Length: 261
Image (cartoon, rainbow, N blue to C red; front, side, top):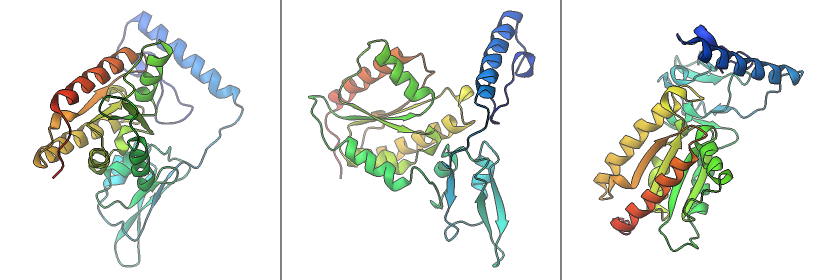
């Protein structure tokens, strides 16, 4: 029932054809979310937004097309080139544009690439478990909610699995995966929303393509591509996360330690 515009909800046949019970369920959900939204009395907009380095940006037009909120536009510069400009009012700080930029000209003000890399190194710097380290990169929506739901249901995932939360898996870059293996991870899991239900439009789909590219690069480096996997979950599928984490642990134990050239 949610849309890309805050405070706008849709239900029933406005989304796609559905039967009466499903329409009623969605209408109930939309009504509750509308009431919750109106009870706040005002719209609060934080400044978790994307920031463009205009010295690097120029002419590719990737981010305006990629942005699920239409928050990025191209502005002409004096030298005849164009640079991206971000509307702080429209931007929701999902990071999909960051993962799409081919020259690293755009970052999130609240989560820079250097900070992501630092978190990866920190999470993998200590291993008090007897099992090989696995990094799980989770989106802040369904992915991390699924991890949380496993805990609330008293389902234990292996202690060797380290969780890194990002706004959306669309922010993922191949560099993050390679850095994880360099820092000592024996496996990497990317946990995102279902492609058809991603909270940030095409973020999960873009992450899947990055995972496929990273697998090819890992193979070229002599690292087994099956050490990297992506899961698409909804928030109640904590049991599937636990099962996948256990299977990944067993897999990397069988493969042995990563051999870096």
